[in-house]
Length: 371
Image (cartoon, rainbow, N blue to C red; front, side):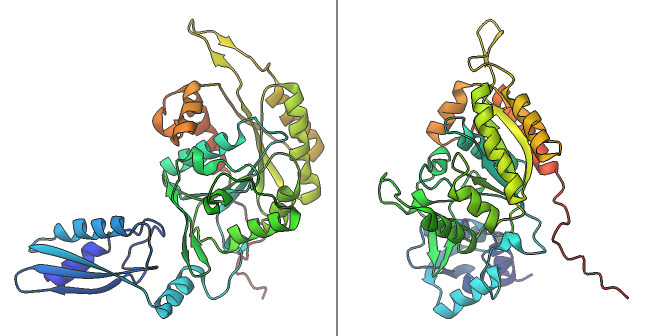
Protein backbone atom coordinates (compact mmCIF):
# COMPACT_ATOMS: atom_id res chain seq x y z
CA UNK A 1 0.00 0.00 0.00
CA UNK A 2 1.33 3.42 -0.95
CA UNK A 3 1.32 6.32 1.53
CA UNK A 4 -1.47 7.91 -0.51
CA UNK A 5 -3.61 4.77 -0.13
CA UNK A 6 -2.72 4.43 3.55
CA UNK A 7 -3.73 8.04 4.21
CA UNK A 8 -7.09 7.55 2.52
CA UNK A 9 -7.63 4.39 4.53
CA UNK A 10 -6.87 6.35 7.71
CA UNK A 11 -9.32 9.08 6.69
CA UNK A 12 -12.07 6.45 6.46
CA UNK A 13 -11.78 6.06 10.25
CA UNK A 14 -12.58 9.74 10.87
CA UNK A 15 -16.25 10.05 11.86
CA UNK A 16 -18.20 13.25 11.33
CA UNK A 17 -19.33 14.20 14.87
CA UNK A 18 -22.82 15.23 13.74
CA UNK A 19 -23.65 12.81 10.94
CA UNK A 20 -21.85 9.93 12.68
CA UNK A 21 -20.49 8.53 9.42
CA UNK A 22 -16.97 8.39 7.93
CA UNK A 23 -16.02 11.63 6.20
CA UNK A 24 -14.91 9.63 3.17
CA UNK A 25 -18.41 8.18 2.83
CA UNK A 26 -19.94 11.66 3.06
CA UNK A 27 -17.79 13.13 0.28
CA UNK A 28 -16.00 15.45 2.69
CA UNK A 29 -12.47 14.59 1.52
CA UNK A 30 -11.74 16.99 -1.31
CA UNK A 31 -8.14 16.00 -2.06
CA UNK A 32 -5.11 14.27 -0.56
CA UNK A 33 -1.61 15.31 -1.66
CA UNK A 34 1.57 13.55 -0.53
CA UNK A 35 5.05 14.79 -1.51
CA UNK A 36 8.22 12.72 -1.74
CA UNK A 37 9.25 13.60 1.83
CA UNK A 38 5.99 12.24 3.33
CA UNK A 39 4.38 15.65 3.92
CA UNK A 40 0.60 15.33 3.57
CA UNK A 41 -1.95 18.02 2.78
CA UNK A 42 -5.63 17.06 3.16
CA UNK A 43 -8.46 19.25 1.90
CA UNK A 44 -11.64 18.67 3.92
CA UNK A 45 -14.99 19.95 2.69
CA UNK A 46 -17.27 21.12 5.51
CA UNK A 47 -21.04 21.08 5.00
CA UNK A 48 -21.33 24.77 5.90
CA UNK A 49 -18.87 27.62 6.42
CA UNK A 50 -19.79 28.11 10.08
CA UNK A 51 -19.57 24.43 11.05
CA UNK A 52 -19.42 24.49 14.88
CA UNK A 53 -17.29 21.34 15.04
CA UNK A 54 -14.69 22.31 12.45
CA UNK A 55 -11.99 22.18 15.13
CA UNK A 56 -12.96 18.64 16.09
CA UNK A 57 -12.93 17.47 12.48
CA UNK A 58 -9.55 19.09 11.80
CA UNK A 59 -8.05 17.54 14.95
CA UNK A 60 -9.41 14.07 14.14
CA UNK A 61 -8.07 14.22 10.57
CA UNK A 62 -4.66 15.35 11.79
CA UNK A 63 -4.53 12.56 14.40
CA UNK A 64 -5.61 9.84 11.96
CA UNK A 65 -3.18 10.84 9.21
CA UNK A 66 -0.25 11.47 11.58
CA UNK A 67 -0.42 7.83 12.63
CA UNK A 68 0.25 6.55 9.11
CA UNK A 69 3.72 5.10 8.65
CA UNK A 70 5.87 7.29 6.43
CA UNK A 71 3.95 10.51 7.09
CA UNK A 72 6.28 13.26 8.29
CA UNK A 73 3.84 16.19 8.59
CA UNK A 74 0.15 16.94 8.12
CA UNK A 75 -1.65 20.08 6.97
CA UNK A 76 -5.45 20.14 7.05
CA UNK A 77 -7.14 22.71 4.81
CA UNK A 78 -10.79 23.34 5.60
CA UNK A 79 -13.01 24.30 2.70
CA UNK A 80 -16.79 24.35 2.17
CA UNK A 81 -18.97 22.18 -0.05
CA UNK A 82 -20.54 23.72 -3.12
CA UNK A 83 -24.33 23.79 -3.38
CA UNK A 84 -24.19 20.86 -5.80
CA UNK A 85 -22.10 18.85 -3.35
CA UNK A 86 -24.50 19.65 -0.50
CA UNK A 87 -27.46 18.58 -2.63
CA UNK A 88 -25.72 15.29 -3.39
CA UNK A 89 -24.99 14.78 0.31
CA UNK A 90 -28.62 15.44 1.29
CA UNK A 91 -29.92 13.03 -1.34
CA UNK A 92 -27.39 10.41 -0.21
CA UNK A 93 -28.54 10.75 3.40
CA UNK A 94 -32.30 11.16 3.01
CA UNK A 95 -33.15 10.05 -0.49
CA UNK A 96 -34.81 12.15 -3.21
CA UNK A 97 -38.09 12.70 -1.29
CA UNK A 98 -38.67 14.33 2.07
CA UNK A 99 -40.93 12.66 4.59
CA UNK A 100 -40.91 11.05 8.02
CA UNK A 101 -38.35 8.24 7.72
CA UNK A 102 -39.71 6.37 10.75
CA UNK A 103 -42.95 5.73 8.83
CA UNK A 104 -41.19 4.09 5.91
CA UNK A 105 -42.19 0.42 5.46
CA UNK A 106 -38.59 -0.72 5.86
CA UNK A 107 -37.87 1.27 9.03
CA UNK A 108 -36.72 -0.84 11.98
CA UNK A 109 -36.57 2.09 14.43
CA UNK A 110 -38.50 1.54 17.65
CA UNK A 111 -40.37 4.73 18.52
CA UNK A 112 -41.44 5.30 22.13
CA UNK A 113 -43.53 8.28 23.22
CA UNK A 114 -42.86 8.88 26.93
CA UNK A 115 -46.04 10.27 28.48
CA UNK A 116 -47.42 11.24 31.87
CA UNK A 117 -50.73 12.46 33.18
CA UNK A 118 -49.25 15.39 35.11
CA UNK A 119 -46.01 17.28 35.43
CA UNK A 120 -43.43 16.73 38.13
CA UNK A 121 -43.23 12.93 37.91
CA UNK A 122 -39.72 12.94 36.40
CA UNK A 123 -40.75 11.99 32.87
CA UNK A 124 -37.92 13.90 31.18
CA UNK A 125 -35.29 12.52 33.55
CA UNK A 126 -36.55 9.01 32.84
CA UNK A 127 -36.47 9.67 29.08
CA UNK A 128 -32.90 10.99 29.14
CA UNK A 129 -31.55 8.18 31.31
CA UNK A 130 -33.27 5.47 29.29
CA UNK A 131 -31.71 6.96 26.15
CA UNK A 132 -28.28 7.16 27.78
CA UNK A 133 -28.52 3.55 28.95
CA UNK A 134 -29.51 2.35 25.49
CA UNK A 135 -26.68 4.34 23.89
CA UNK A 136 -24.18 2.92 26.39
CA UNK A 137 -25.23 -0.58 25.33
CA UNK A 138 -24.22 0.22 21.74
CA UNK A 139 -27.57 1.23 20.26
CA UNK A 140 -28.05 4.30 18.08
CA UNK A 141 -30.51 6.54 19.89
CA UNK A 142 -32.32 9.80 19.25
CA UNK A 143 -34.54 12.04 21.38
CA UNK A 144 -37.20 14.48 20.21
CA UNK A 145 -38.01 16.93 23.00
CA UNK A 146 -41.69 17.25 22.11
CA UNK A 147 -42.52 19.21 25.27
CA UNK A 148 -42.38 22.50 23.37
CA UNK A 149 -43.72 24.65 26.21
CA UNK A 150 -41.69 22.96 28.95
CA UNK A 151 -38.55 21.73 27.17
CA UNK A 152 -35.80 20.44 29.47
CA UNK A 153 -33.91 17.71 27.59
CA UNK A 154 -30.98 19.92 26.41
CA UNK A 155 -30.24 20.95 29.99
CA UNK A 156 -30.51 17.39 31.31
CA UNK A 157 -27.90 16.30 28.74
CA UNK A 158 -25.67 19.38 29.03
CA UNK A 159 -26.26 20.51 25.45
CA UNK A 160 -25.43 24.13 24.69
CA UNK A 161 -24.58 23.71 21.00
CA UNK A 162 -27.12 24.85 18.40
CA UNK A 163 -28.12 22.47 15.60
CA UNK A 164 -26.26 22.78 12.30
CA UNK A 165 -28.35 23.68 9.26
CA UNK A 166 -27.44 22.31 5.85
CA UNK A 167 -29.97 24.25 3.79
CA UNK A 168 -33.35 22.89 5.00
CA UNK A 169 -31.78 19.82 6.63
CA UNK A 170 -31.05 20.10 10.36
CA UNK A 171 -28.27 18.11 12.03
CA UNK A 172 -29.09 17.48 15.71
CA UNK A 173 -26.40 17.97 18.37
CA UNK A 174 -25.00 14.79 19.92
CA UNK A 175 -24.46 14.31 23.66
CA UNK A 176 -23.59 11.04 25.41
CA UNK A 177 -23.93 9.39 21.97
CA UNK A 178 -27.56 10.55 21.74
CA UNK A 179 -28.86 12.72 18.91
CA UNK A 180 -31.18 15.37 20.33
CA UNK A 181 -33.50 18.04 18.97
CA UNK A 182 -35.49 20.54 21.02
CA UNK A 183 -37.19 23.88 20.42
CA UNK A 184 -34.96 25.23 23.20
CA UNK A 185 -31.99 24.98 20.83
CA UNK A 186 -33.52 27.64 18.58
CA UNK A 187 -34.26 30.24 21.26
CA UNK A 188 -31.89 33.08 22.12
CA UNK A 189 -32.85 33.04 25.80
CA UNK A 190 -35.13 31.31 28.26
CA UNK A 191 -38.20 33.02 26.88
CA UNK A 192 -41.56 31.22 26.80
CA UNK A 193 -42.93 29.58 23.68
CA UNK A 194 -46.44 30.98 23.22
CA UNK A 195 -47.88 28.71 20.54
CA UNK A 196 -51.25 27.12 19.92
CA UNK A 197 -52.16 23.77 18.38
CA UNK A 198 -51.33 24.32 14.68
CA UNK A 199 -47.89 25.76 15.50
CA UNK A 200 -47.14 22.90 17.88
CA UNK A 201 -48.11 20.35 15.23
CA UNK A 202 -45.93 22.07 12.62
CA UNK A 203 -42.94 22.20 14.97
CA UNK A 204 -43.19 18.49 15.71
CA UNK A 205 -43.64 17.70 12.03
CA UNK A 206 -40.52 19.71 11.18
CA UNK A 207 -38.52 17.87 13.84
CA UNK A 208 -39.50 14.57 12.23
CA UNK A 209 -39.00 15.57 8.59
CA UNK A 210 -36.21 18.17 8.50
CA UNK A 211 -33.98 16.80 11.28
CA UNK A 212 -31.60 14.11 10.08
CA UNK A 213 -31.36 11.42 12.76
CA UNK A 214 -29.97 8.79 10.42
CA UNK A 215 -30.49 5.10 10.98
CA UNK A 216 -31.28 5.07 14.71
CA UNK A 217 -32.36 1.94 16.56
CA UNK A 218 -34.56 3.78 19.05
CA UNK A 219 -36.28 7.17 18.96
CA UNK A 220 -37.69 8.53 22.22
CA UNK A 221 -40.17 11.41 22.31
CA UNK A 222 -40.47 13.33 25.57
CA UNK A 223 -44.12 14.40 25.49
CA UNK A 224 -45.70 17.19 27.52
CA UNK A 225 -47.92 15.98 30.35
CA UNK A 226 -51.57 15.28 29.63
CA UNK A 227 -53.48 14.48 26.47
CA UNK A 228 -53.23 17.74 24.53
CA UNK A 229 -52.24 18.74 21.01
CA UNK A 230 -48.78 17.20 20.96
CA UNK A 231 -49.97 13.77 22.11
CA UNK A 232 -52.58 13.77 19.35
CA UNK A 233 -50.05 15.01 16.77
CA UNK A 234 -47.62 12.22 17.70
CA UNK A 235 -50.34 9.66 17.05
CA UNK A 236 -51.06 11.24 13.66
CA UNK A 237 -47.45 11.74 12.56
CA UNK A 238 -46.05 8.51 14.05
CA UNK A 239 -48.92 6.01 14.09
CA UNK A 240 -46.58 3.10 14.86
CA UNK A 241 -45.17 4.79 17.98
CA UNK A 242 -45.72 3.07 21.32
CA UNK A 243 -46.58 4.82 24.58
CA UNK A 244 -44.53 4.50 27.78
CA UNK A 245 -46.40 5.96 30.77
CA UNK A 246 -44.50 7.41 33.74
CA UNK A 247 -46.17 7.88 37.12
CA UNK A 248 -45.30 8.13 40.80
CA UNK A 249 -46.52 5.71 43.51
CA UNK A 250 -49.18 8.19 44.65
CA UNK A 251 -52.64 6.90 43.73
CA UNK A 252 -53.78 10.38 42.65
CA UNK A 253 -50.89 10.59 40.17
CA UNK A 254 -51.68 7.12 38.86
CA UNK A 255 -55.31 8.08 38.27
CA UNK A 256 -54.25 11.11 36.24
CA UNK A 257 -51.68 9.06 34.31
CA UNK A 258 -54.41 6.61 33.34
CA UNK A 259 -55.84 9.28 31.05
CA UNK A 260 -52.55 9.59 29.16
CA UNK A 261 -52.40 5.84 28.62
CA UNK A 262 -56.09 5.53 27.78
CA UNK A 263 -55.56 7.93 24.86
CA UNK A 264 -54.33 4.84 23.02
CA UNK A 265 -57.95 3.69 22.76
CA UNK A 266 -58.69 6.65 20.45
CA UNK A 267 -55.33 6.73 18.61
CA UNK A 268 -54.82 3.01 18.11
CA UNK A 269 -51.34 3.09 19.63
CA UNK A 270 -49.93 0.41 21.89
CA UNK A 271 -49.04 1.13 25.52
CA UNK A 272 -45.76 -0.70 25.96
CA UNK A 273 -45.64 -0.39 29.73
CA UNK A 274 -45.64 1.68 32.91
CA UNK A 275 -42.67 3.10 34.83
CA UNK A 276 -43.06 4.09 38.47
CA UNK A 277 -40.66 6.88 39.42
CA UNK A 278 -39.74 8.13 42.93
CA UNK A 279 -40.84 4.77 44.34
CA UNK A 280 -38.85 4.75 47.58
CA UNK A 281 -35.85 6.28 49.29
CA UNK A 282 -33.10 4.33 51.04
CA UNK A 283 -32.32 5.58 54.54
CA UNK A 284 -28.87 5.50 56.21
CA UNK A 285 -29.82 2.41 58.23
CA UNK A 286 -30.67 0.50 55.05
CA UNK A 287 -34.43 0.69 55.47
CA UNK A 288 -36.76 2.16 52.87
CA UNK A 289 -39.11 5.11 53.16
CA UNK A 290 -41.96 5.64 50.72
CA UNK A 291 -42.65 9.40 50.80
CA UNK A 292 -45.21 9.21 47.97
CA UNK A 293 -46.96 6.05 49.14
CA UNK A 294 -46.89 2.78 47.23
CA UNK A 295 -48.79 0.80 44.65
CA UNK A 296 -49.40 3.52 42.08
CA UNK A 297 -47.48 1.73 39.33
CA UNK A 298 -49.29 -1.57 39.86
CA UNK A 299 -52.62 0.27 40.04
CA UNK A 300 -51.99 2.09 36.77
CA UNK A 301 -50.76 -1.00 34.94
CA UNK A 302 -53.82 -2.94 36.08
CA UNK A 303 -56.27 -0.23 35.06
CA UNK A 304 -54.68 0.26 31.64
CA UNK A 305 -54.70 -3.50 31.07
CA UNK A 306 -58.45 -3.47 31.73
CA UNK A 307 -59.20 -0.41 29.60
CA UNK A 308 -57.03 -1.50 26.66
CA UNK A 309 -57.97 -5.18 27.00
CA UNK A 310 -54.34 -6.25 26.76
CA UNK A 311 -51.58 -6.74 29.28
CA UNK A 312 -49.74 -3.54 30.16
CA UNK A 313 -46.72 -4.47 32.32
CA UNK A 314 -45.09 -2.48 35.10
CA UNK A 315 -41.56 -2.31 33.68
CA UNK A 316 -39.82 -1.02 36.79
CA UNK A 317 -39.75 1.09 39.93
CA UNK A 318 -37.09 3.81 40.12
CA UNK A 319 -36.04 4.91 43.63
CA UNK A 320 -35.42 8.46 44.72
CA UNK A 321 -31.70 9.23 44.49
CA UNK A 322 -30.05 12.60 44.99
CA UNK A 323 -27.49 11.62 42.34
CA UNK A 324 -30.28 11.44 39.79
CA UNK A 325 -31.15 15.07 40.48
CA UNK A 326 -27.50 16.14 40.61
CA UNK A 327 -26.82 14.43 37.29
CA UNK A 328 -29.75 16.24 35.69
CA UNK A 329 -28.49 19.59 36.94
CA UNK A 330 -24.99 18.85 35.64
CA UNK A 331 -26.11 17.40 32.30
CA UNK A 332 -24.71 13.97 33.23
CA UNK A 333 -27.22 11.07 33.31
CA UNK A 334 -26.94 8.88 36.42
CA UNK A 335 -26.67 5.75 34.27
CA UNK A 336 -23.32 7.10 33.08
CA UNK A 337 -21.97 8.67 36.27
CA UNK A 338 -23.19 6.11 38.85
CA UNK A 339 -24.13 2.97 36.90
CA UNK A 340 -24.09 0.80 40.04
CA UNK A 341 -26.59 2.93 41.97
CA UNK A 342 -30.05 1.42 42.55
CA UNK A 343 -31.72 4.05 40.36
CA UNK A 344 -29.28 3.51 37.49
CA UNK A 345 -29.62 -0.27 37.67
CA UNK A 346 -33.41 -0.02 37.53
CA UNK A 347 -33.27 2.40 34.60
CA UNK A 348 -30.88 0.07 32.76
CA UNK A 349 -33.27 -2.82 33.38
CA UNK A 350 -36.20 -0.85 31.95
CA UNK A 351 -34.07 0.13 28.93
CA UNK A 352 -33.24 -3.53 28.29
CA UNK A 353 -36.91 -4.44 28.51
CA UNK A 354 -37.83 -1.83 25.91
CA UNK A 355 -35.07 -2.75 23.47
CA UNK A 356 -35.85 -6.48 23.74
CA UNK A 357 -39.46 -5.96 22.58
CA UNK A 358 -39.73 -7.07 18.92
CA UNK A 359 -40.37 -4.30 16.40
CA UNK A 360 -43.07 -6.36 14.71
CA UNK A 361 -44.01 -6.61 11.02
CA UNK A 362 -47.18 -4.52 11.10
CA UNK A 363 -47.27 -2.23 8.08
CA UNK A 364 -44.05 -3.63 6.60
CA UNK A 365 -43.81 -5.05 3.09
CA UNK A 366 -42.54 -8.63 3.05
CA UNK A 367 -41.80 -8.55 -0.67
CA UNK A 368 -44.01 -11.57 -1.32
CA UNK A 369 -46.09 -11.72 -4.50
CA UNK A 370 -48.89 -14.27 -4.81
CA UNK A 371 -48.43 -16.72 -7.67
